[in-house]
Amino acid sequence: MTSTERAAEIDLDALRHNIRHLRDIAHPARVMAVVKADAYGHGAVPVARAALEAGAAWLGVAHVSEGVRLRKAGIEAPILAWLHTSGTDFVAGVEHGLDLGISGWELEHVTAAARELERPAIVHLKIDTGLGRNGCPPDKWDALLSRAAQYQEEGLIRVVGIFSHLAMADEPARPETDLQVQAFREAVAAAENAGIDVEIRHLANTPATFSRPDCHFDLVRVGLGIYGLSPFSDQGSADLGLQPVMTLSTTVSNCKEVPAGQGVSYGYAYRTQKPTTLGLIPVGYADGVPRIATGAPVLVGTRIYPVVGRIAMDQLVIDFGTTGLVDTPDSPLGKRAVLFGGTGSPPVEDWAAAAQTINYEVVTRISGRVERVYIDRTQDSVQNRAQEAGRDGDA
Image 1 (tube, rainbow, N blue to C red):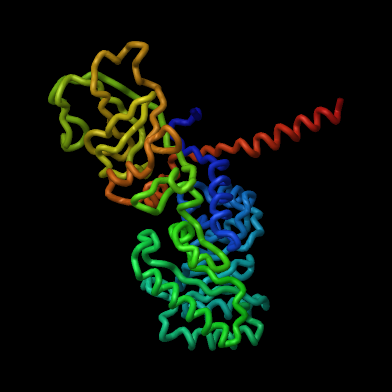
Image 2 (image 1 turned 180 degrees about the vertical axis):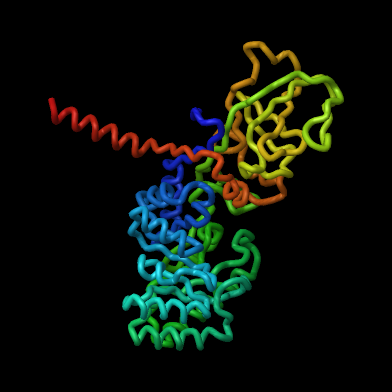
């Protein structure tokens, strides 16, 4: 247990395992580790470094600013940023050597940045194959290809990739994915016919990496999977050979015996049915814990207890279901309380179910008030061996 009051422990060895496992599944396609949104709340820089050490070939971010931060941290691997606004600093993106996703309107801004810097921009053209969000509409694809080919001839851009995004790969039996794959193949063929030398085709996200090898192409973009979580409703992490990376824990900050009928937290949405012991857990929605997740599990010692009453900004309450604990050696006061994590801990999916959301959201929303503590046995071992070798050399 860490000495912090509340911590999200990030197991970088588990992350490396997940990267290697996904590499094996995707081979010969390469792996892009998606580290947007501060690596889904896990910490972008340490996660990016560990992912690259384990064999990821690319990094993926949503915003140019996220990619620039990685560059400033000394990361030199290819980084793709694909979600832009009129306020995006494309000059910074080109200057820092980011690959830029282009759906249409951005192309003029990117070429303007390239002119200013007298340096070609590296771009990936995105086709909307059916998700209906970003990406070039199919009826405008040929026009985008024509403009891109012209700018490439002028030396302003270099088109290296074509990509798209699947809508429902987490439901492998759905026929819409087949239609998207076909549309993607047609878009790639059109690009090649337009004289664009397509080096990298990428379509697969985490669920498609597991369930649709026909979507692997040259590169798979994996986000949730590298953090050890399953995108499927009927399969857990272990079923997919993944190890959860984040463990959210704190300590029991108070416990007290209360009578039957005691109201708990705001609004008295919960009242005790019998005399019992309540435990105070010092995390709440300001820490990113979903406010509506009443009933979610908290592990104290070897037992799991439910969250009762409304979750507040800074704290929540669990019911130990018995009396006779306070001021005894069995008192839970000060003991570690684990909300979710890896082996032996409640799975994050249980919190997602209680909050009527998905595991992606639960880990991503853990706030900066919760300290990230990095568990890195691999690097510790390397450093220990280096220190031992140094001592041997001095002998």
